Image (cartoon, rainbow, N blue to C red; front, side, top):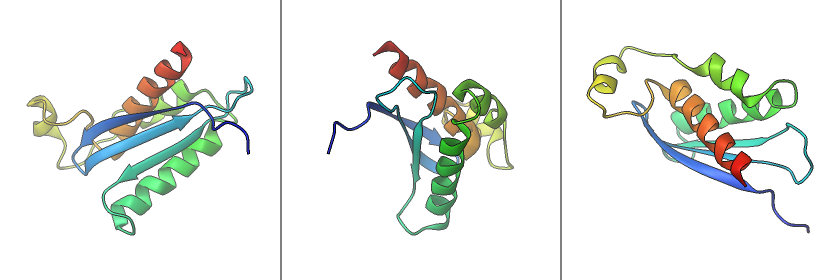
Length: 113
């Protein structure tokens, strides 16, 4: 087996809990990325939603830039997100918003390699 893809994992805090966004880049120069999102316990509802979101983002990277994907996820909020963001308790106003921020950070770090 060859070398694993270079990857970056970013830890973010969202109202749903601590989120880990891992972005992996294949050795070729394509824009395709492998994205894994972890949240909560394995087998839980939140983890299933996060895993599904990661799979969709991975597929989308074959057709559009990561920045466009992140832009579409930014600003998604829900009833629990507003006041805690203002107090600095969360780095994202929802799972989607935190994932968007994590994607951009990881993509930037991969570009620096």
